[in-house]
Amino acid sequence: MTTATQAPLTAPAAAPPARTLPSAPAPALPSLTGLRWMAALLVFGLHVHNFRYFGGTGGRFMSWGFEAGASGVSFFFVLSGFVLMWSARPGDRAARFWWRRVARVYPVHLVTAAVALVMVCTLPRQPKPTLLQGLADVFLVHSWWRPWWQTLDPVSWSLACEAFFYAAFPLLARLLRRLGARGAGALAALAALTVLALAWTDAHHCWTQPISSFPAARLPEFVLGAAIARLVLLGRWRGPGLEASLALAIIGYFLVPQVTADYAATACTITGFALLIPAAALADLHGLPSLWRRRWLVRLGEVSFAFYMVHLLVLRAGTHLLGTRPRYDLLTGTAVTAVAFTVSLGLSWLVHEGVERPARQLLLRRPARRRTA
Image (cartoon, rainbow, N blue to C red):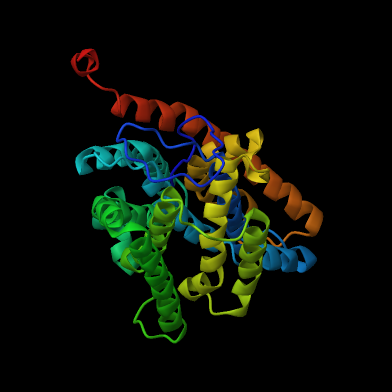
């Protein structure tokens, strides 16, 4: 997960041309940060649904509203490609880029992995990983082997995918800069078609194991986001506005239960997400109205990564108080969900303020001699 609030908001009259100055900061895109929170909230709702906090009418409502919540991770992948390409500097070195990514995600990953390990050792009925599984999780390679994909903090499988994207990004960024607008558009179309092709093969059981957590299978979503960002940077993006894009994304989201689960559901949402992200970015750049730019929503978006990494651990710990699949009535289930959400949000704020921000500042601090020079 990446952030899009890196510089003051600007409002040019038209889509911005390609940036030529390596030192020029990317304009801020706060609406994308607000949308990140909504994607994290969908994943939270999915896990509440999976833990069966609700029975009866409440359970049916949760199935209707959050059974497709896993698509929030697909949104993260497309958004990650967009934001990284948007903020990339032409003269940046690969090693510096990779170090910034380590500083961004690794401190929170290590803390949540350590908490998960403590839970495994102290709470009953927790799946205990082997030494190799634990090491694979720590070094973010566990998603390459399906039996290891949900060790320690289960949601870290998506970080393993992101680690693969980060490794490939310097080469991807160089390619996009050389291709130009037509080439970027062709690459975006190819990435979208690849997602649809993989979804078809997954729905028809062409693979020996699910590919929803396989990093190479999720790479086209990241490439799609990066290619679209390049088109926006070149002023060549032509897509619907924010309202129409949001409507298409919502329609795609509610189509998900009509298809096979897992990766095949990506076919329903990829078009809406690929249109919504640049539409929100252009709304910020042009100063157009955007719900997602509200201050409280942007603030929640800033802690969304920590929330994403923490919430499933809270829900897992809660099973020792609530039992597994309690299936409460609507009122009780709502109260229990509110408590779980509040605890998760409070802990995510602590992790964001106490780990994520200070660790990133420490790791990215430049030596005094270099600052003086």
